Image (cartoon, rainbow, N blue to C red; front, side):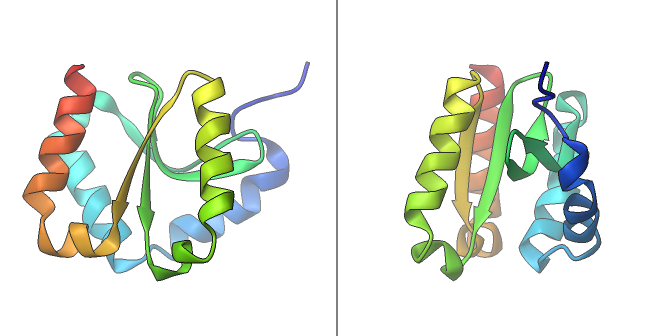
Length: 116
């Protein structure tokens, strides 16, 4: 049986990503730990061949923060979202700019997803 979550082959990459958070990921991590403790989000969690910025096992919600590099990787992001959806996982996407300039709106959107 193939392991779906946190495959060993991606372990070093996940560790590297956790050590090198973007400023927006650091902000989001603090928000998730402060306001959504019971959701128990994890950083850099892998599902199959993909690594998600944040993931709540309890609520089956993945959160992705997108910077300008995602403009060139739109098809990859769509494929990752389709893969997550096929595993019954909802993906929330926010632009880095949203995290910096509208953090309250991001928090409200996450809260709505958790409550739905």
